[in-house]
Amino acid sequence: MEKKNIDWANLGFGYIQTDYRFVSNYKNGAWDDGILTEDANVVINECAGVLQYAQTVFEGMKAYTTVDGRIVTFRPDLNGERLEQSAARLEMPIFPKDKFVEAVVKTIKANEAYVPPYGSGATLYVRPYMFGSNPVIGVKPADEYQFRILTTPVGPYFKGGVKPLTIRVSDFDRAAPNGTGHIKAGLNYAMSLHAIVDAHKQGYDENMYLDAKTRTKVEETGGANFLFVTKDGKVVTPKSDSILPSITRRSLVQVAREYLGLEAEEREVYLDELKDFAECGLCGTAAVISPVGKVVDHGKEICFPSGMTEMGPVTRKLYETLTGIQMGTIKAPEGWIVEIK
Image (cartoon, helix red, strand yellow):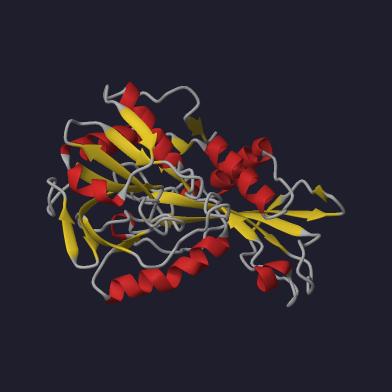
């Protein structure tokens, strides 16, 4: 298929409408087969459950053109599993993982003209989401739901190269113990908006959220997990029941162990440990790893030895290896890459 006439090299990280999206409806206790449609508009009742009580969950993933010209996506089964977990927590019907992967592949295939070419630095962002669609006025789960997948071509998350971020320890709490921090629900992101706008006003790139119970342990930012590297080269990621199980973070831990021969562990990370780490990064779908150069804790600066000019050496190896796997220049573990045929 001929590619769309898009200036791929200068794409930003924003929404561009593509030709098709997948839509499936849940009514009378069952999902329909779903369709691909050219209509980008969602029409729902003014009293729809999603509008009244924020009953919505979503996922984020990408499609890539590999070095040998194939179109692939990365570990969609894990996105499907996480959507199942998110839906269950908000009393929404499960959209089965196998049907999820099938719908993702179908939607990418229908929009393959929008998948940027290899080497452009751009990718096709894929956004599956689900919401309560029928009128709900009493506080209860909806009875009807819609599952959709949209796609949009996006440029690299960081234009002009990756520069280490400056983040602050936030006074806001992201998630309560036994709350919804471990699922990908829209409500979690809504509550983070004020905190990130305030951080930007104060000159910071992001927030570091601590555990709400003791405010002594590192959790995550509003949209990414943390990854640390010790001075002797060990990879450490925070462990908590109230942070999102990032697919990128889990993949990086496996890459560290199996490709780079590094020790990697998931454990509780305390705020007062930060001064002892050599490198820090934020990991997620959008940028894979965003290096952090400095954390500011109420005026106290914690500067990582990796500095404020570039990624640290271990972080860079992790980044290059995982992106190499995604782009087809490095052999992937079994099942990580799904080809769009």
